[in-house]
Length: 363
Image (cartoon, rainbow, N blue to C red; front, side):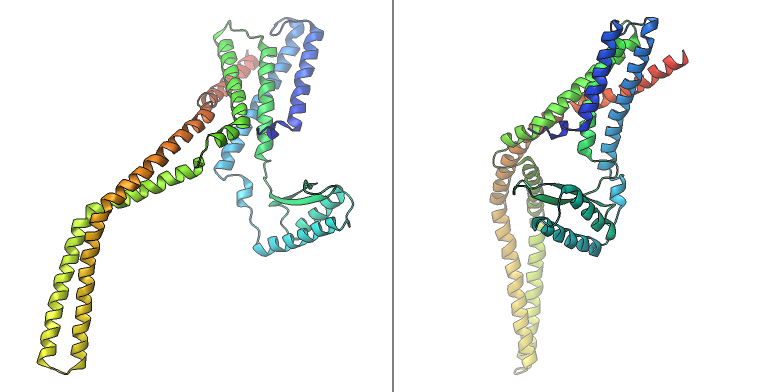
């Protein structure tokens, strides 16, 4: 299972925030959502923390979209290949020094790696990770990775998941599941639809790759989709060849007629001036051209005879691959189906939260 995204500092922060509000609630002895004067501070604080959680959730979506559209700063960073090569050579030597036990701890290795990166001007585009090498006992391994200016997507995903859970609890603390007004009903319903579908998405993120791998047989989903497109192109080419065969045969026959006429003309000229080597060579060239033209006609005839069988084989292969691709796509659609509710409901929820905050502030 892919649970690495759940292990982060965001988990601890979310737990601490929720635990602090639970302790405050127990001390205050008010039911959740109570609008008594001495509970107003609790209501406002939980409300603002919920809004902050929603902002983080929205920022994750914006960060993901920006990365997909290649709008984040790292796509604009450039370094010259010689810089990268020189840095790689020195980092390799740094790894050799680690293996020779010339460097003490992880801190010293990180400082040496950072100095190498700065010296060669690649520190803005690349980052170095120093961690224990699982292949050896007590050894460190230096790994070079691309730098992401706005933070790693894995870290953003972890924040999205944990603050989404915290937001679900904060909404409960803040409103106590009140549904007496249209706004209260809409906010509560949308909050729990968004958070519930988000938790479902986190579950699918964790177990989905394993499910998909088990569902894949001879072909992965990527290969099956690529093969489906390949066979579709091949079938289109075969259909086009069959459609154009009569015209191509007519053109080939016209070429035979022209070659025969050229050969007759060459033979007449050679007969009129016997012994002329140039004219004899022209006859041989015309015979060769005629043979080639006749071969073109035969090639078209062979192609017309073979194309139906080839097309049947292609269609059979395309059907097999298409069924496998459709089966695997159903798995992928199932794993992504939660977004059909999550994304539009999130947009509406953020708009209603903004309206709710403004109405509280103004009235």
